[in-house]
Length: 557
Image: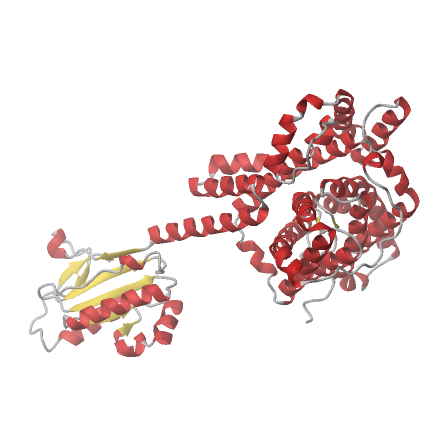
């Protein structure tokens, strides 16, 4: 268990006062950035504003204290917004808490089972596709508040939200649009004025002041939600078989997404500080943090790339910065939370528009579409559309299935079983080809031999004088049981035709399959040659008693 040691313990071994000063400064700045984001993401997730802060406080502290990254900042993220909103709509807060706790357990198990490295097997096109899809769903979910629309029903699915926005667009509130546009202008142009103060904080303060002082008819958070400044309290959900069965797919989605997002964020952080995170410890920390968040009234959390980058840029170099960020948010919750009631809803929508734009990665999508094979573009497109139209579970399952099928087709296309060309067929007389006795056939097998390529293994009939078959397998890196059955069938056909079989240059993995299946013993170890020259010499030896005078022909290598 030595490898599952929190990064905090390593960092504190050589920790100094100067390090603490840097972490303190970075933690305070990150908390200022996280404050409006946490509130906005909570509202986008269909929960109360303070629950976003509960998540950033509890999960943020636990993940920093136990995580495998020096600088990871965790909290609510946009990737979870639509997922959480759907769970709350279907199963209520009890269902959300149950799903998040189960996801936490799954994440801890993933870390303990050293599955951190398995995340790399999720194709880039899938992560790009569902990230862009989530960005679109966030934008669609905020159309109501940005335009001040009056919905006649409460749609949950993204397509239903689009239909409702179209049907009720005649109720648009022009004042809300102006406030939202003012927030967008601040978010876009404030970084050119100052990079030290987060633009989202300025947008919140300015729009709240404008709406309050001018008495504008625009909904604020306090008009729609009851704001609480109470500390998070431990609440254990009532677990039941029915609830667990209902939310288990959602728990799987939360766990997978938390793992992907946190490890991607940790990789980005590693590149920025020249370090290396412990992926398995990070998964354990994510699991503990998510379970703790649910127990204290929060929502799912994961590593936040933007907040992690802000932590690094402001001097944070140890997990202490993330813990300070959580402590500062706790003070804000207790002292300043009532003022959150003044934040206009169009401002929240504008903040989420910017979050969606930043996470969409549209430049990456365009690059993939322009320069990638059509199969990769198909995977990205399908994943994107399913994320928007249905949900992330279907998108990931279908996307992975499609990616695997396309990969297997590529591998099957690469796999080739081809007989050498002989001198009597080519007419080569210049000695450029390897000598092959006239009673020997040589088949070259190239590429992985698995169920997708097993049908390429030929059937065998006696061909004149040729009574020895050499199967050259130096270019076969791997083989499965389906391909083995094909070779078994070929061997039986050769025995029926009294054709000797020799296997040449069998690599390690295929050899283990031969031995485990018993075909190695059936054929005989003497019939496995280390290379083609040894195989040809063995073929001569096997046929010496039948051949009085060798009449060498030639063939391709």
